[in-house]
Amino acid sequence: MDKDSLSPKEKEVFEALKNVIDPELGVSLVDLGLIYSVEIDEHNICHINWTLTTIGCPIIELLQDMIKKAALQVDGVEKCEAKLVYYPQWTPKMMSQVARLTLGIHI
Image (cartoon, rainbow, N blue to C red; front, side):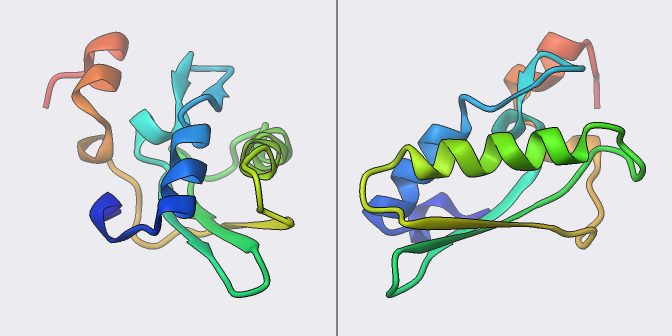
């Protein structure tokens, strides 16, 4: 995701998403590279495309709720629609260096 193309409000949402920690891995969804896009429309509805490290993850609903709650904490966001997507397919290369070091993954 190109963070430079985000509006100031979208950047606030992205920053809030850094506090959403995957309870199984102990790393933020942002550092895992699971947040693909953040957009806020003219009605102040936040649209977030996100993915999983593996298909069939047992905590999809929990993660989706956590994403929505984080976005709704940003002033001016009226509603959040978090859409689970599978393209592009996630790979460990999408993780931040911090996440790779935390999880001991060497690429």
